[in-house]
Length: 159
Figure 1: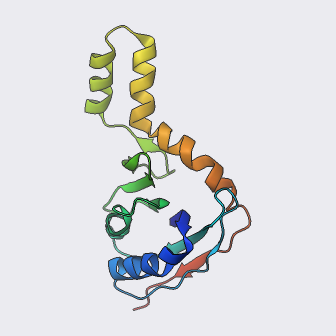
Figure 2 (figure 1 turned 60 degrees about the horizontal axis):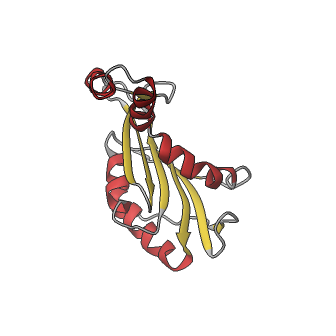
């Protein structure tokens, strides 16, 4: 699933082109006004494709500093799920996800957080919030609420 939470209107066709190129098929999105940030638009897009297509979409959009977006790729039989979030202020966040969509924090990342924090509970809390992508969630949350009644476009690969 792709959520473009905010984009300047003039950038919309370029986003469609980039996503279409990443998926190997042209796409057209239905853009709606983003009430949280006047002058911008938003869209939602769902696709079915091979593992790694979410990474291609996130990579195609990551350099566009004016975009706020999220890409989620469901796990498959032989692949983990994934989630990418991008904001102009924070850049890109990536995490592996489980079958329920929860962020999976690798053991080494937890050990690093414990090492950095030593015995400081506040520092451990800060490190774990960073590992979970909490700053990205906090920044994107107001934009997500604008999607409550937005249309979704489904793209199915046949054959």
